[in-house]
Length: 217
Image (cartoon, rainbow, N blue to C red):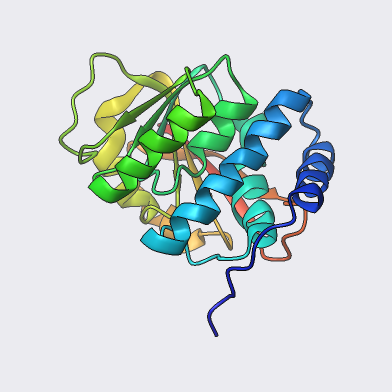
């Protein structure tokens, strides 16, 4: 059954964001919480036309998208972050909002999604975010990244194979997954290994969530 796209109650959504950040142990200024709410507004409006995400309900967007993305923040490294297959800006936009000191690049080869990312970044005044519409395997930026993150982009072996040329020395891949991807881990190339497999607790989300941190062996 398709979820109904009902108009959001912004006060309740604001409280939900505030509570979720506290539960995640993230200290965010009121201005950041306000921008996270604006991001949900933008995503809700665009999603009614462009079908960016299967989640239609703004309240479920907060737990299933926003807080899910922010749950990885304590485990990221460095300040140069690449979000591969960013789609609706997940996790890149929430991370960029929560961590203004990060330089976040949002990469997606889909022009419709890249257009959304540009509009969202403009409305949110995300000075620390850059949008790139390219295929990850052929993109050749001037600099490499401390951390390359993906959320439901591909299996681990493919993710590493496609993006390994973008990882800085000592950098880490951060793959967001649902259940523990044991078979995918077994299929990793021999020159890469799992640094850490973390089970994440996302406020308001009952489903299993894991983060796989991968480094050069």
